[in-house]
Amino acid sequence: MSTTNTPVRVAIVGTAKRSGYMYGPIVKALPEEVDLVSVWGRSEDSARELGELLGAPWYTDLDRLITETDPAVGIVSVAYAANGIVGRMAVEHGLHVLLETPIAHDLTEADAIIRIAAEKGLKIEVAEQFHRRPLEQLKLNLLATGLFGRVYLSFNDYAGHGYHGISVMRSYVGFDAKPVRVTGSVHGYDLTPHWSSLANAFGPRRETQEHGIIEFDSGQLGIFHWTDVGYDSPLRWWRSSRFMAEKGMGITVGVGLDVEERLSLLAPGGKGPHFITIERRWERVDGGALVAMVAHTGNPDVPTVTWSNPFAPAEQGQGVQWHDDEIGVAGCVMSLVNAVRSGTEPTYGPHQARLDQELILAIRKSAEMAGSPVALPL
Image (cartoon, rainbow, N blue to C red; front, side):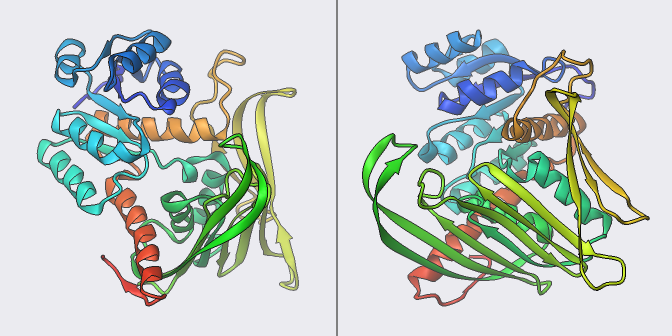
């Protein structure tokens, strides 16, 4: 365990696209926190390409990588289907790991990763960044003040797929809330021909819609909606996450990434809604890096609630200008780094990641059973 602020030695394990355009640049932008010492890939060509892109030694032999470059942390970024396999390999080799989502597609594989890491005294963080994005962090800070009271109902309304959407929905009711029953419905529909931006192709498409109701032991309720063409179809532009609470509510309304947040408490007199004003603060009047997000509540006891960007430049103009998703992913990296340094647990961690995957699997299982409720745990 590192007890100082010496940069933690990091290897990128895998050559998926995010290795080069996301994780490599983020690690390099945090030289006081992490040091990229090597990269690993299954094939010589892909490993060499990533190593040359990031200016790091490259390997196809993980044992040799560990012996020669001595990383403490492995950022596992591989093809979607290989998450669990390579994640397990990394912890078996003694690395603290940041795993891509989902932690594993199969729950028994997730359990094996968690068990092996516990036996070896290793830390696991999972790159579930949706709730770490600035706007979501500000909302969680607002909920933590108690201004909204208890959240009764939480929605992922096409804001993210699978475990991502489940995680957004759970963040509002609280990650400590225990889900006990899931009811799901899954349907396929034919769509008129149109352009897929991800496939860069035009033609007929078929969508799969997933819908779920998650009941918590606290009496709180979560609602999940998703369509598998939700990221790249002009027919499915809606994005919203919502919560309804004892003293107010919040709703994100958006088209793609262009979203507006509507948060409301009671106006004085209790006869109407009072809408909270959200402000983005930049390092310069003409832009630059995001410094903070501030909610002006209208409540005299708690007039403002602030989320400060932990990655804002210490000196104006002398730092990164990350967009919201990069800030979220950097938060995942630092959650693991801080856990390795201090011996504490990551702020999200493998058990939360496993639960998010379990819930989406439970929705699908319930749908296979004609909508019969499924008890948890599976």
